Length: 87
Image 1 (cartoon, rainbow, N blue to C red):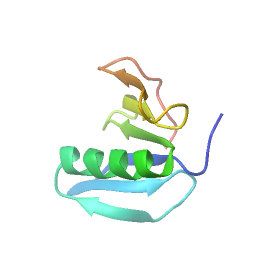
Image 2 (image 1 turned 90 degrees about the vertical axis):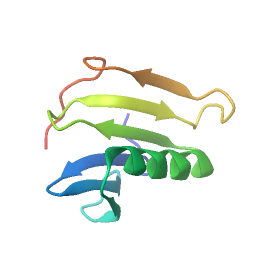
Image 3 (image 1 turned 60 degrees about the vertical axis):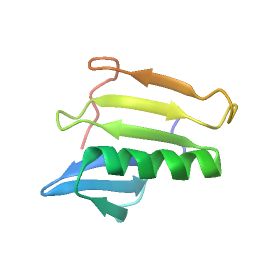
């Protein structure tokens, strides 16, 4: 189920954007994927939601959910673990 509070990291021309799910505007832009992912994870952890890294190919590359238990986040990693998303 979609949650409008989740944080998405999406590759953009010249950088990586962190967006809230359902929002058209980025809340931050970063020069590296790692910095964007760290920012999204920090916000998600602080607010108790999920951080989702969408690869250039449109698939979920990494997913970390801090909502269920902040001490034991749900985490999916690795290429091919996600599903292709519509733009």
